[in-house]
Image (cartoon, rainbow, N blue to C red; front, side, top):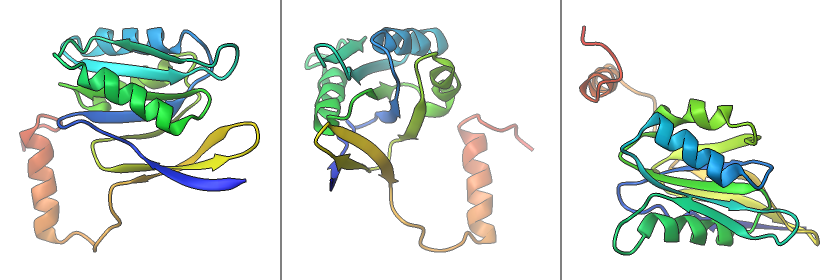
Length: 166
């Protein structure tokens, strides 16, 4: 067995949800989960089929000139090369708005991360294929928050509408 890492490519202004699912209709079901939860979201989902033709299945509503989200989702799925992995890239929505619906998707087995941070996937390569063992999401902590940091955190989540004003 060989251990390796793959850095996920997250386009500017996008968030990544990386997970594992188990069935060919995953890409379509995740598409429906996103559009039914945040209709204004722009996104692409790529799903690595693990049997049969073993294709990267793709669904997207990314209508940009260069289909950036679609291209990045496919490139990430191909770089992972792990069966049943899915890559969901989304703009105009935060993962917090989507995670419940993604988890509720019948095929979804696990979610490894939901982030806009730099991400490295830790993979195992065997004679059969690849598996995602874990994720490096962002950077390591640099300390413990102070009272001022706590105040800024509280202000931020209220500024973006996720908590009520006091």
